[in-house]
Length: 56
Image (tube, rainbow, N blue to C red; front, side, top):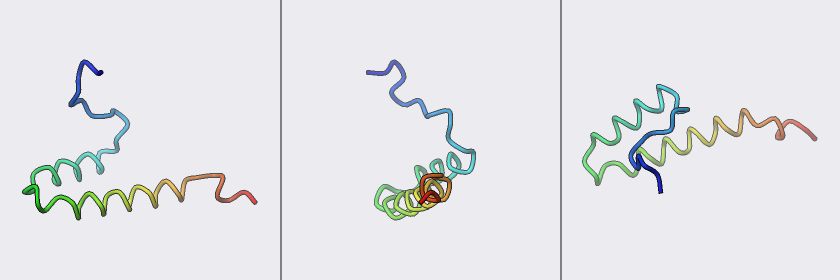
């Protein structure tokens, strides 16, 4: 268990942090779609930067 349960990872990009802050400011019932879009965007970014995908 962490001493700071609400601390954010330090490696988040500023754009991601701003997106998360904006999502958190929305009413709860409006957040799911935004989180889904963010997850899709982050997944695509990770897949593009994965050097193993180019090996073959």
